[in-house]
Image (cartoon, rainbow, N blue to C red; front, top):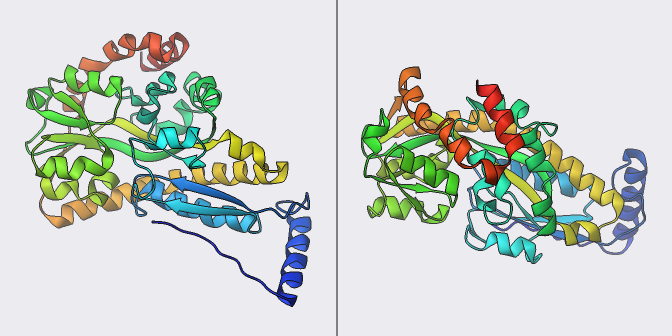
Length: 347
């Protein structure tokens, strides 16, 4: 979906609007302090629907940034892969063809390998762990918010958004890793996720998010791992008979802005953008749990998919196979200090 804002004022209305904007800027300390009246257009592309945690946060960000900048930043949100998809969005932001993205951490594998830390299985036990484990002053947080690889690729990190905890969806009852043996599961393009699925006996297939439904429908893959909101919004549950509620992994979105675009703006607008993005992260996190809960209920109400909540013992059977083995396997990719910190917390 493309959202644009066109502001046309003429005659006395122009004078009135500019006067009000100047007064508002002076009072609020937000936009208008530099006297720069230039308008900047920020294109924000993402691959999920407007009803998902990311989609809702993107629309909130659009509204708030335009309001607080007094229209000096014009935001265009393109959802559901309508501008760029999984395969081309990373190149687009490096070229400043799009100014902002919030891709899943797995999409950064080739440009910032340390971000694969967020793909590690059982990194969080639940959403309540995220603010602590990924706080900016932790080793995990530093890998996200102070990532030199992203800076060298013309990206500035604005925040960490949640999609939620991942569940295993398929057409068979999944209660143990043995139930996954020989079956094909869709993953995001991540070596960590590939190793995880293979450790459980499955075959991993990296497929673009927009193509998952058709791949499931046509039997190209047997299942996958995703959040309830993504499963429901993409109608995956209509072609899958079973979901194992495993909470085995996390999908986190890393909000990034192109540095050429960011540096082209005056300081007051840079500050507003950073502040609104930070508040959008809070808005997203506060809503992600509710959105996933609503999606779970919608899936249950549809009556086509059985949700099987794994017992602690069943979940541990999955965990013991990949922790700490996969953590150690990716120690050199993610970083010794990060792995040491994580394993110390799990011991």
